[in-house]
Image 1 (cartoon, rainbow, N blue to C red):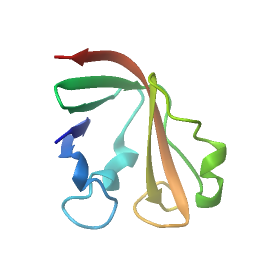
Image 2 (spheres, helix red, strand yellow):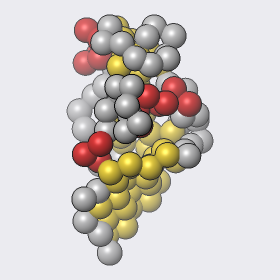
Image 3 (cartoon, rainbow, N blue to C red):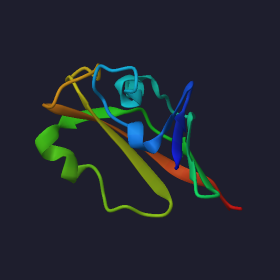
Length: 106
């Protein structure tokens, strides 16, 4: 099983959601700042990404205009949000993008 870590929080990937439960890691996604690290690991692999820009909010219908195709050097985290970036709503999406800074495959 893999996992995801952002500042002050870590989870197994199958628990990622943005609802009100205790297992809602993306509920605090608006606390991630430029320079923070996002670590994705599992199956003896570990990728570390650095957040380069502040998060931003778009209408849910416009997400495809702001997130490109997946690649090996970038990751985007997206969560339902209110227009001010606080949790949680289906109307808007908070988007964080980070760039790969290291990768290991043990």
